[in-house]
Length: 250
Image (cartoon, rainbow, N blue to C red; front, side, top):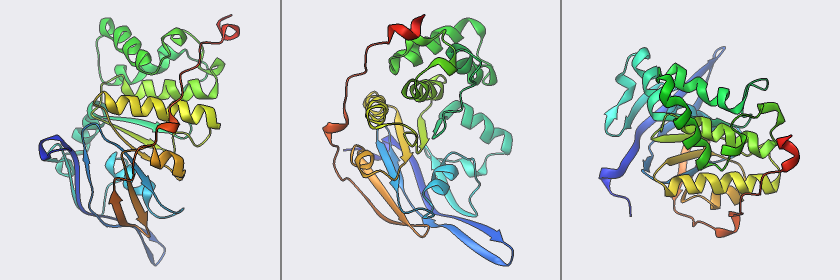
């Protein structure tokens, strides 16, 4: 059972409003949630319910209209824009539905970019990149072109890219949305493995199987959190990572 000392995220009455002409769209209304270290949490709800808005607010990609957002006990909404940018680079890793790897760059070069932005020294970069790729079973692809990876491998490389700065929190927006069933299971298994190693994972999904593979589901409807509870982790999502395809090594 998680304790308050392991609390990573706490939001209190977070709201997000948009102006659409004369209309006010309330995308998020008084959302109060908690996430603890090492949890894998799904945010679920109908299309347009506000689940992605909540994720983007947690990632400091969209500022909330009102409310409190504590990260490890600190109100990061009080940070300056520069401080928030540094916070994102240091504490957060992002995995999106489209992995957004640079296709004409190698896996190494793709993973090196966030390290360059974080001003990591060149000597330590390769070790950090290899360590991140080892976590997702892709060290054998380190020097491959991104456009020669399979869909599942590209998304695992995107997860590795999110890990290179050793973040406290990994945020995923439909990270398996463009994958087939087998690769979806592999990616979910990788994320669950990371949470067991102490990474905290919060992801948006519309797929019930993925939600039930998480430790907890936060359900949102019409911008409001309507339930937040443990619904059980199913083991049927776990598949072994396939052996490398020799044909891709040519």
